[in-house]
Image 1: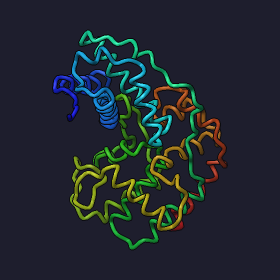
Image 2: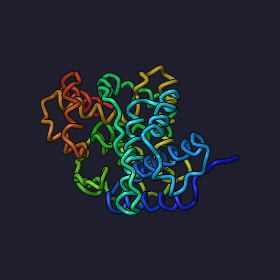
Image 3: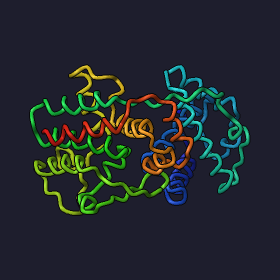
Length: 308
């Protein structure tokens, strides 16, 4: 017998996802993750209990069901952090059920994961960032190589999330300050370093597609908006080709931006503002990281650009 999720439950999942986006202002990436987590749990539940998951059965789920799902994920090497996010997604769905559908399940809402120390974000040293850019530059020069280099400069020079960088449009560059809409719809203004603007101009000059004011700034080889998967693939390829550190990722450049600024003496609250963190606690984690002085690094960074 094939077990499944009843269409009525899918309809509620749809409503919940739209509510998260419209009322809670969750980003599209967060919406996808939350929806995927909730469906994964209900799919597991269908097989685990040997029955279709319908609206009535949502009331009967207990903490053992949820813990069995989390345990099965741990056996598949899912990290504590990812499991914690998945649990948060499921509990969000059940809070929605309680508030909007009168489906109250305290067993699910009471489940907590035992505390595990949060892993510190891994940043790159200035030398490693320069090496990354040099390795990209060593490839056969093309507009795609220039695009990837521009992304590196942008992510490290401004601390943007990759999703924020890929959402930029050409006309954003016309302003001295760029408005970024981050997680939860929170807005912040950033200024681009001159070296970043030069790298972006080099990319735009070689891009074979017409980039009008309303176009997305970063395009793929087909002229469509560049996606995170393609960027991750480019970083994976360069890591493997040149044996770069495993944590050489787009997000590591954002971590490096914060870590280096903090080491230079920039206040945590200012860094929180630059990163667009909702909670100061999210930024304070960088205080635990060691890094070399950033001011000298930025001077080196700028000198290198002028020399080139």
